[in-house]
Length: 143
Image (cartoon, rainbow, N blue to C red):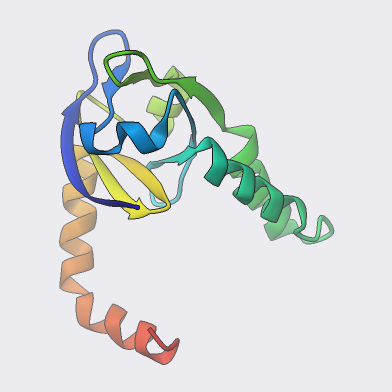
């Protein structure tokens, strides 16, 4: 299970060290793809396989499901985790998420999210301002 917020930096070669706490669970390879809300999603190989299986069962006749599958699958890249626990983030993924040097890696149970630190800060501030409304909406869903 991935939880917590970790501040890291991308080096000049596009390498990003993954949090030490998660390296064993992530193993020697991960899948990184375009996420939602202007971030990247990082999955273990096992979790990615399960997600891909669910995506393959979505109705291809619906435009929204095709668009979501394209976002997740066409943008995905299998990345090797080196001996220092780093991955090299492809340029197109760094550009998609507007990643500069400082990033935040957020643990969200079955995946990690990689955010530009400033974008994360703005997102968090907005979420905190609307926490009451968000909680109320989730309460209606039984959360």
